[in-house]
Image 1: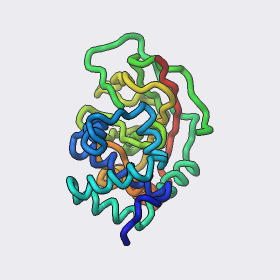
Image 2 (image 1 turned 180 degrees about the vertical axis):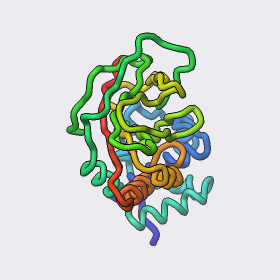
Image 3 (image 1 turned 90 degrees about the vertical axis):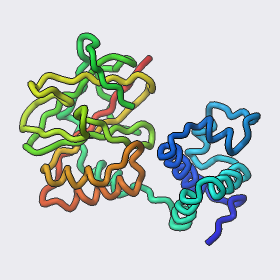
Image 4 (image 1 turned 135 degrees about the vertical axis):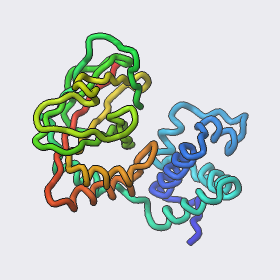
Length: 257
């Protein structure tokens, strides 16, 4: 069914945002490229424009122009938009419900490391905020206490968006033993420093600890870049279907300038 974008709902405009965000990631474009192509090089866009777009508050006339541009320039993404907008944007509710039921805050901590080291890896709600506050650019790592052996995969949330947080230079997951350990870590158990160099504010981190088989199944559905609601729900389905509930360790940190 064709959508009249001049009367589009907030949810439909949120769906349009998600399709555009995915397009930019897949095509290697940035928001300035997008605005220039769709709205014209002479159009000035304020700093809060993307926030309004994400929240579904973009003007309906601009939404219509974006849809027409998609159809002309990226028909594959236009087809995806039509399917998603008609079906209703996936909400990620199964993922959010799974996290809310099983998260635990007491067995994971952030550790500020004493000094920067060569090879630092830079990564891009009412819940407790852990200490310490992490200065932008400062090296840190995590210390987790696992109640089982198996494997672990980490996620980072910034606002409403979720990403996988690599735990090895060559991969997302790491083996884990019972007891306390640093993540990410070197082969000798010493921490590999992380740093957040760009985005201050609240960041959430989640460690999913389960069998190696379950973690491998989760890895199969994690895309590069933002993990969109359909993939989040699929991860929740995989985790909930196992013979035992995985361990889910949650921590919220504040990064300050």
